[in-house]
Image 1 (cartoon, rainbow, N blue to C red):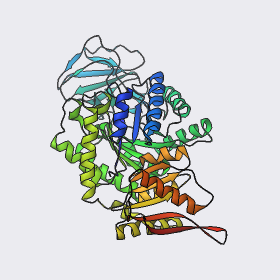
Image 2: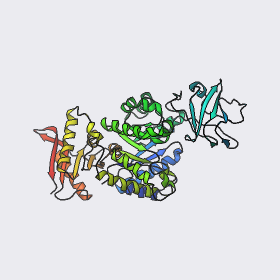
Image 3: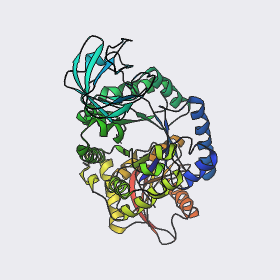
Length: 469
């Protein structure tokens, strides 16, 4: 059983019920709604379909809304500008008309104030590089460093520049309202630069949804986020290594080191962590991955990230189902070979930590066939997953539907809905029967169970070892 979770991005290739059912059956854990492209009515429709299919198949899946975030883009151009090294080029703001033959307006008025002479401007995912030579009140004069064709509305990156943009745009706030309305499990916050950005979203969610906490995944996408990573990690519920923009903003040779450090720190601090972007990029057009892509997926699985994510591969790609099958096959094989061991750095600081860690160590030592956890809010199950059991799948039972879907992002955990009895022993018996009925355990299997034990009418946390009859 694969323990690394798979997140896919929905789009025209995957947004119809027949495909959604196949994706869930093939092991998709979370569906991502990319609000850079998605319309609200479409999101409502696909979320309704996903929930219906999930209930039909009796398989828990989560929903993640990914905000567009504040973006800097070029304006409209009548025709493409052909740029070559040495060309002079102007960026203008507030409708200024440049005297330069090659120029374009931008949607960010403060770009002139934020940028300095000598800074590098990257356009169109870093394809076009320019260097700032000088600036005026409403113009930035640059020299083109790399050849390229510039068209309308291309994305602009300013590596190392602290931009004066809000954490949440008006569009983002409207999209957050949609996430609350549809009871999504996660919001991935784009272009996080500091911990305060996460706090801003958390305050907004608390005001809009005081009785239901949507978890926040902070996307690490630029140099400032890397510099502020520790505080961002502690402020958020999880981290996404968003390697698209991150690979543009940072020297590309640093990207593997940044990814490894982020995964390692997240595991140490029991935070969810997702590795995303370009994992199977060639499969947008081709039915088989490149050897480099296979190794990339394998590295993320070996590092024991909670989840690996697909973007264009499943939103607009020609082979979305094959992408899931490729990821599943790679992950299962790599998991059998062992992991990087980053979770061994977790500090056991509370009695609850010690109890869960002891249960995981027992499961490792006896090669238990299953680790059963009973949880109302997901904390105990999440902690068990954080310790990364070497051989044993975790089955987390909860009566709470929100808890079940939130746990879909936790490594190694299969969440299962179960009503709890007032008698802990009856709850355990019901859980064992449910696993038996699902053919997940069989006679003579060894089970490690974290549950309550009643002694003289008092309940205590306990670890049990049982053999299935």
